[in-house]
Length: 318
Image (cartoon, rainbow, N blue to C red; front, side, top):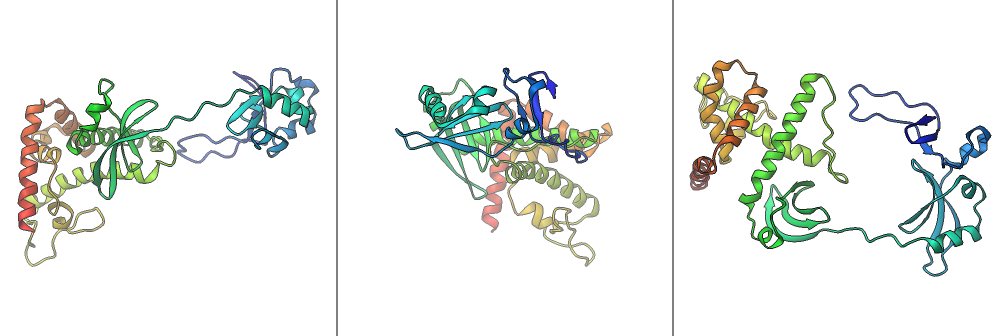
């Protein structure tokens, strides 16, 4: 094959692409070094690029194996974390003496950056929420989800953060993720990948999206109660209490046992004013999110106080 980065080898055809795949899948592919003469390549030369890693020598100073293999970027010699890209000629004729010569000329790989925990803000839904510093600055970590802290914040200020300071950052990230997924579904495309660094895909995204879904479910339950006359604690006409769509739980179990957060109280208050605009439930929730973000801090503080009162009321009734 020939592309933007030169010639490459591909082993077999590309596999069939699943419908709505978030990322295309390709057959194994290796870039050829610049000194490779494509016209002179044989089948054995090409297949050698796809062979498993091979130990060609051992570093007597460190005891590490010197391995030769090839990846998407071409053939390489690797000692621990240090890598040396190889020419086609070296890849074909590599022996122990040449491997030791190249290994001695390698520069040691720089140490991998690590993160340091600055503050532990406690557990949220059973998972610790911590403030950390890493190679790209300050950030907060909950479960496997990260949110970046403002660039102007220093470590001393980060150590003084509280859970209430950091929670809005995760809520905004949850709203952004929900908007992207809703947009992808409405356009018929695959939902944007929720994969996060490492293995941060399924559980973390579900935790974020769940917060948004709970907000929408709560507003929906309150609306149905108003329409049917069903209360949170009782039943109507001797029939079983209304159930929500989230797992078939009774409305009282899914919506009233937890204190409402400030944004939910805001949604319940403002949703009726959007009824005449003909918006879909998704667009309504988007609009409510925009209205919430447009509020001044002192206006949001009113709903924060209402949430705290709700929390105290529920705590005293249990």
